[in-house]
Length: 335
Ligand code: CP
Ligand code: NVA
Image 1 (tube, rainbow, N blue to C red):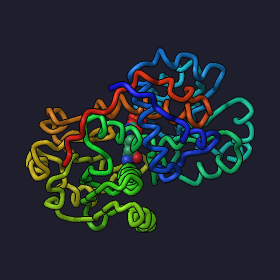
Image 2: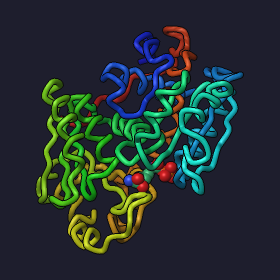
Image 3: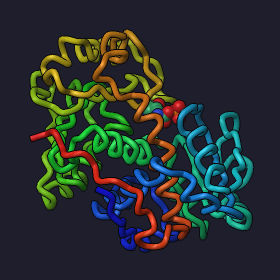
Image 4: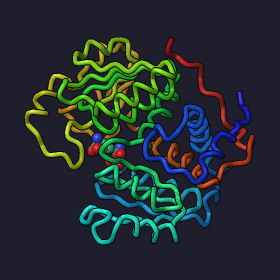
């Protein structure tokens, strides 16, 4: 049934920066997902929404999905994009990060940055009057988690009832998904070797949020803990910028996502991966190419979720109730 969507909660996002998912509230996430859904259903309804707006993208690391989804997404809404390749020269190497930000804000309406050090993002935020969006740092990948939330909901799983299982390294993507579960009152089981658990300081922060929302975040060592999970998620064992480490790989081998591991979760469990995948390491072909894999939906949704976020951060929201073509999500399938 079609229904008008009230995006008014998103008005409070105008001018804000998003460095971690916890920079958003559960209500804002829900409204962003509704807006992302409206975008995905009908880009024509948002034609020109970002006309005359400029996005600057600063990338210290390689990218396929993040770069293309931001660039095409922003341009689809009428804006222009400037990409600065920082793979060979870190942000702050040629001139201080603050000076950099104070220049960029004179031309750009928003800055999207993929960095090694999360501190680079906080320095940009402190020195810029335009929104900064984290496109991946060593501790967070909030745009990935937002797109993943859209994908989970699209597949009929309500976030507050979702049991998400993570297998592998307790990395940046894992931390942002833990934040998603904590904020939305969901459940997440994180299976890692004890030596590769997510950052304890950030885990404690996330657990404090979970205690307030009723979410459950469990750190485990045994894949048996993922029994009954709605989705099983993994990622590269060695993230960009990390040294190859044979001991780490050896400790993670037992957590490769195979059909046998998926069977522990159950026959309806979706397989998720932020990509790029290292086939034969963290996941085998039979799973990533299997019928329960939703990896390309995740990749597609990067664009819609990020566009929703940018419309809100730039104060370019549709008038209330204007996105009437949005349909209700199908009835959720998770009990
Ligand atoms: N998932 C993701 O961020 O992919 P890229 O590294 O290709 O941008
Ligand atoms: N954890 C990975 C994610 C890539 C999208 C990395 O940081 O390299």
